[in-house]
Image (cartoon, rainbow, N blue to C red; front, side, top):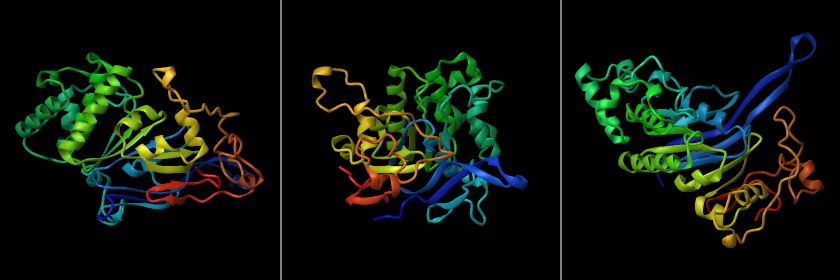
Length: 322
């Protein structure tokens, strides 16, 4: 088996949120709390979970926008920010598509300049060669080269996200972190953007980390899915296996909440979660899901279940998995 493109090893990201005596930090928000994952070449790894579970924080660590509190990320077998690697050089290999397709685009720059800026910063090609590349990227994402002279405010949300995708592709990266790239779009436009991402992936052999709080989009595009809760991984499974037989009670609850277009075809039991999501400043002792889990007992409230491989390619952090 080939070496994974990205290895995430025991990554933690804790933010200080309170001070005690003499200004010493005594309270920490544990946004990401010990996550180990691998992303293979050409694979789409979906990250799902409720808001505040740490998935976007993890994505920003992989891109290099945030430094972890502990742990390390390896890219192509080497430390992400190791000796001889600058953030600028990293940008040639790892890019990001953001959730808000308007806020992520500079309103003072026209589309050609937005897409061509990475090429200019890295001093790639002549002015004519860069413009040719921009025109090709616009055509590839379903826009016209004539759109290059226009500004972001002149486009719809879906078109803006296409511009964001073109910008992410400008340097021919190997990995793109997609941070909820369709959540701000209409449902019909979401499908178009997801199909575009899949087409581009097939053309270029890209790897994606696809972040979303809902399962529908992730199911459509992902090869494997990672379910996160309060900074921890609850389950890792191939997409088909996860939907056919979720191992973790939290995964089962997320799947049961997905709307079924035809109620007569809905044969799965609805799992209703009790209570609200606990604060990551003060996560529950034991299993972090125990305050809302229908299966939780005293053991779950005292000891944290390890993330274990239940069957080939399937991992769960639950004493009563599957």
